[in-house]
Length: 329
Ligand code: AHG
Ligand code: MN
Ligand code: MN
Ligand code: MN
Image 1 (cartoon, helix red, strand yellow):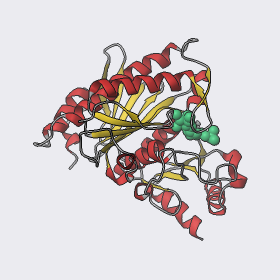
Image 2 (cartoon, helix red, strand yellow; image 1 turned 90 degrees about the horizontal axis):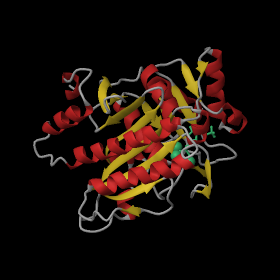
Image 3 (tube, protein in one colour; image 1 turned 180 degrees about the vertical axis):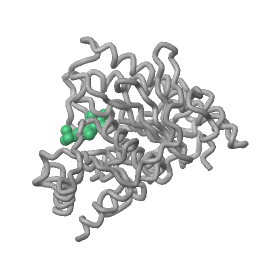
Image 4 (cartoon, protein in one colour; image 1 turned 180 degrees about the horizontal axis):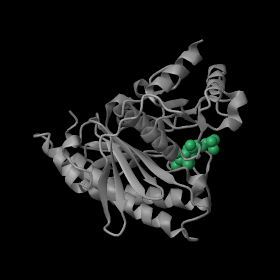
């Protein structure tokens, strides 16, 4: 049984993390501290986003390694999370969407690696649409007496120790898993606390909503085009925010499917394996859903580069199964 079931709605996140740790007699508390560090940065970024002023909205005149124009908040959030992880002391090395190379924190004895998308959906910031932060946590493979290595960062998704996201929406939410179910917490701004609001989230096996950028349909693989036609024939609803975290969160709770397959423009897909696909695939599976690139389970993929992209089909188990069948016909 998921031990979180024992904790009632309204439990503070801090208490929840502490109780989780008590379930592991040999736990040292380092992962708990790391989660707290992420939460601290999330609170600061939530505040930055809600300011919605000229210091936080708009773009920089810079590009990241993906060739995307950086928004001010991409840069601000990147700094906030790196600073929190560096000061917290539990992370030796970070992979960030916004930085080409590995970021070494100087915490050479720390055991953990974090891969993160500091602001997901950043093109939506200036129109006040929900955005998110995505994170994946790995235990380093190298000895804990130096910087983390590339090999430490290119681990398969199955090796994630924890993963989660923060959704900065009408309310700010943290949804995360340490491999024993998925739990969601809602931020109460006036108290500065996250409270358990969505214990042990399970994705319905079947949903009636699909999310994709339909403008790309003519360059989707034929199987995905046929699946899309099937969705329409079944009168499913189309829901696409354009912030992966927000689209994923809706489908996680209500049931549904999200796909961003390869296309002529982005043959290898658009989304990034390390800090978008893997952490969300971990959560999807922990909630009873599935995630595939169309051929291979996302979590089984062996990463070969920090910023590699991959096609993503993710969501309710029966719906993902159906796409897989369409793709092999
Ligand atoms: P990011 O803002 O972190 O670069 O991620 C952008 C991603 C994701 O959030 C979103 O679902 C997707 O790009 C949207 O892509 P399209 O605009 O091509 O639909
Ligand atoms: Mn980006
Ligand atoms: Mn993103
Ligand atoms: Mn981003």
